[in-house]
Length: 490
Image (cartoon, rainbow, N blue to C red; front, side):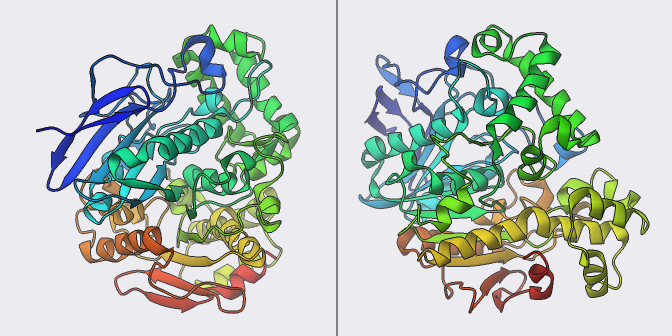
């Protein structure tokens, strides 16, 4: 017999297989459509009878990944009103299980809890209740418009965490034992939630994968981007005007503005905090609004905003290869172009010489990828770890070093996802057909261990003892990997 649970809104019928029950597409807020697309998340609208929870729900408005990225990053685009939904996977027996809440990545423009790589069955198999969250993306989630609350995507995430607090016991989970984790934009979201007063008490551990605590912009700079999008749509930058538009038109306009930003990264046009906080590849993301996000998250965390919350933080070794290799950009970088890139992106003066010396066989494009990896991901992760440690927090650090054999990607951005979720071979083409199951066993076990008691299986990190678990064909702790390169960013 299919399992049925009662949650806010009514009864939900799920499905069970191999000791795991799945309940998919459960609304945690009212449909954010029409005028409500630009309002704070509302209360769930009750339904009659049993709601079918055997298939994923709709996704937030978004465009599929364009070529060539679509071959590496599968999309899940499903229209519908109830896109503010969660998927829940739970063991079929037991109570007071630890809970993990997953916030997906996608540059705050794409992504969904319905991607096959995010299937939470392995976590439930190993005694964890896994919750995957959808939230507003792009303009509805992160534009600054007159008449609309700021950071609606983050407000959705907080509403989902409140739903977990109020409902997770129905699935056997413990609301007082919640780990929130995310990757890329999801990892940046987790770091921002660590700094938000509105999220305090809603989670008890945090995992930040390939994210940091500086991916925010100022209100004034965010308005510049929103105004550019409004101009392309020939409407004022107001919630009322945008709510009257077809969401697909808004998505197309935000895509056009994002492309314009990458081809013409003029700080006077876009605002310096947009270009720096967005790593040069994001156009819409959280803003410092003095309310939900009172200050740059790194400063808040350094001041103790996440005191008492154990943190697991890390990156892949070659993050930026995902963005530069498939597109052919890396192959086009010449030795003469490196100083121009250094000036454009503000690299430390000695970066090119040091990174090249440490990689004598690397091409100029490889060197650019290595430097941008550190600038965009490893340095922000290191600064987050340092701030949280210095504020009295416990930190564990990791790095994924296993290189994918697919398309010369190496240990690129998002490669760890299939290993963390133990979904190798399911919806993760960048890992390839030969992805080692042994690595998935090790990484997934570490995440499960952290969710159970904050101990992933190796010693804590500190500036004095920079222990970094390096996941590879043979995994082990490395003290301060590539410390000379990290040091020049201070």
